[in-house]
Length: 453
Image 1 (cartoon, rainbow, N blue to C red):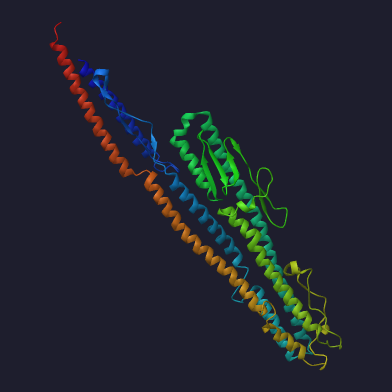
Image 2 (image 1 turned 120 degrees about the vertical axis):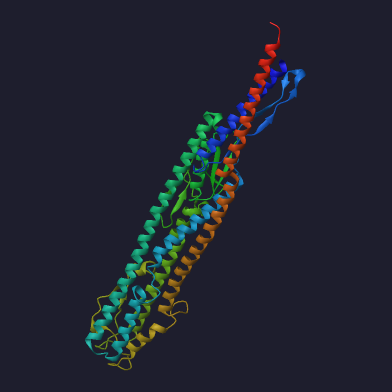
């Protein structure tokens, strides 16, 4: 009888194990589309078989095991911040590229071309008032074109400042969520193995990877420490270390919770791309635009000063600007009159020698060995090349991100086909064990029936 009762006990334990396994399969299926969820597995453990010691054997289960692969998760996060960074760069450059027209049909290159055409038309009739006025009008249009591009670049810079603040705010919000998960883990040790909490954590880390690179370290108490760039604390146990964006100076900076400048660790992801665009790329484009505006104005003014006007006086300046650092935004036409335009050279008053010199200025290597239009074309080309490079890198890392996700999902993602096979396996095992219990029950009844009353 003890053998039958032992067998019944082992079978009952087996039924409980299979019931737990079936529940686990159901939970996996229910969470197949839950972001960040990693499938769980029931592991069977053989119980010792020693009848003389009252150990009937059988099987039981250990705690649920997560299939999550932290190395695969890290690979996904690495590709995520790279892809997000190039995506942001491509988006920002797409808006800026339109300001630099390489076709010469609009904007600054078109206005420069029209000014030199006006110089050429003036050289044909140097004494006529109409071509002189057309020169002043063309110069006014060119100054306005420089002003417009400089204004748009300034607006883009302000927009980037706001985007940096928004990105820092998003990082702080995600860090706060991770801190809350840590607090929940500290208060209840059982939550360490909670698959739903684990899914929340890893989905939040995946979202954080869009903005910046970081190191996530699991601590002995189950909490996660997050370090931006591997150095700057964002989350430490139940404490969040909030970042701030400081755009009060010429360069936008990122500061840690103590106010230290940690911009050097904010170089990747969306935040890194925004910082690079705000602090390096846009200032570089603006600097070149200012150099072109100042160089063009100085070159034309110097040529005019070398000639004589209709009254025999030295030529007056056509352009003015505040300083070399803001030449594009402050470029303007002076109060010059048509009579003060110097068409002639001092040795040939009343001629067109100086107007011809102004016309030829269009092809002179005045900036870095380049003519003015060529210098602008080089600037516009640099913008276009940077955009093409960003788009190519975006496409490349999008594919690498998809591959990393696929490899991760192969390991920890829920496969409905696999779960269906597991479900069928455990169902049949459950049914077989239930049938075995019926047999044992019948044997027990038979034994009881043959025992003397």
